[in-house]
Image (cartoon, rainbow, N blue to C red; front, side, top):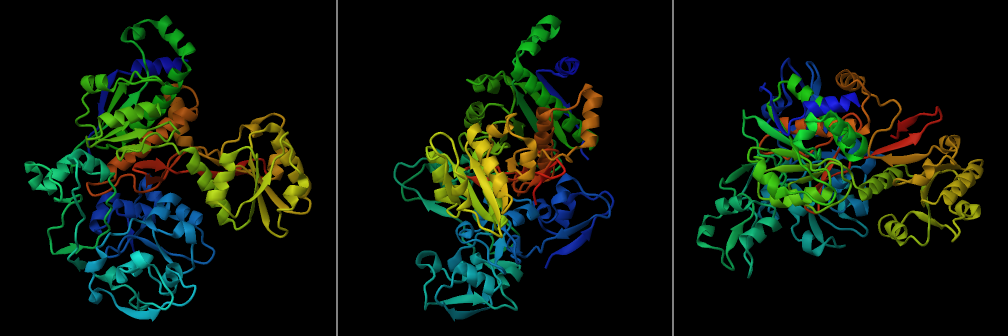
Length: 624
């Protein structure tokens, strides 16, 4: 309790803390060099450096060797090797699986092929009709039966996007047997990747339709109204039907460098040599005079569980802020009492009382409904809003970041892991649960389904009929019934005498937390499960724990660690990007949480999930 009281007296309703500023090749880090300096030296981006050097996210050291991307390639690509999986590639580059699918259309439906090149960063967008034949060394081939874009890309060691560049008709007509298409020559497969320039790149524009408004167009195309006016000066005379309107920055030069371009609408504005501002909106909901009344303060702490969680999160954030101060990072931090509850947040009052004009990133509010309300009011300001704790999907805003993975992302990551193991997947589901059945039917048709009876029983013979001898059989428990869980475990223990069987869940399952479930049974079945936090037994950050105990006299709980992780991740991103970069375009891992963002449905969502299992030595380990 003392640490919470100490924290409260440290808090000011709008307190500010200011800190003073301070083919791939290899680079040896010199003393004092920063990741930003190295990125500029090699004319690349910090995002690309992080993708090739994931550990660099947490800082670089003297004499550390970094892999430097080729500055003339169209984004980063990876050539698929034997037995590689989408899950494995996502872990290698610390990039969300959904982001890989976004950068590689058709990858989810067709899978990987050995030799295929897939995009690790967003491929540069070119106008396919303007690429001259002389830009690429190619030959013509006749499409054979059963050939696909993916098999051709693998055979000719190129990317599918290059095939589209060479053959614009493929986009409308598709690949047909007997037609002639151009493919790059192997020894110099893609002159486009080697060239420094490409000519006559045409920017994106639209033709204004009837009843459209500037506001509507800005929302539809994720651009600000100010940019629309800057790129289209004629708008000062009004918007007219049929008008040609640029919706991305027009390219004025005849030649455009082929450095990677990230054109997602998620960019935090940063002026060189300026201090950035991070504002916390935390729901303390404490009247000013409560600080002076010790008994009233203790009463509120004892009765308000949510306040305790807020203070835990805040205490972890303070350690991260102190780490930033020790590194002399150019950042100003403001702590604001949002005075929110799960029903409402007075955003207009906040806007009146607090100056957000210099704020670059906001962490908070806590409730997703309130994050959405705040995002709506500030949708036209150059401001990123991070939802730190809610797992609700909410409304997608291009300036809103969901730091907690939602349930659908948890399930999808777990299923991709199971796919990567090339085993036999069986799901035990309640037939009354239409959601579970449709999830597998629509997304993972290879999963064999076993129905639970109306009274919750599971027939051992029904499970055995789906098992394949000589393979690892992953049996998914897709039911929260304790009776079903006990029966499934009992049946699998019997089947384990003759088969390799493992128990799996793809989302949180409370039934397995019951005292009626024998822990040794879960160990024997190598129980495997997804988790938002790294619960691995060996995952202890001694440095953070000691700093926290020194400051607050207690060990940090999960909410305190979450506060540290979210804050440190955001500060690190703010410090390691420039005007041209999407600061949420690479993966990061802190103490207990991963942050692997994907742009989806107009919003930014974290799909950083751990896959863990119970090992035979009675510890929890991260699955590989």
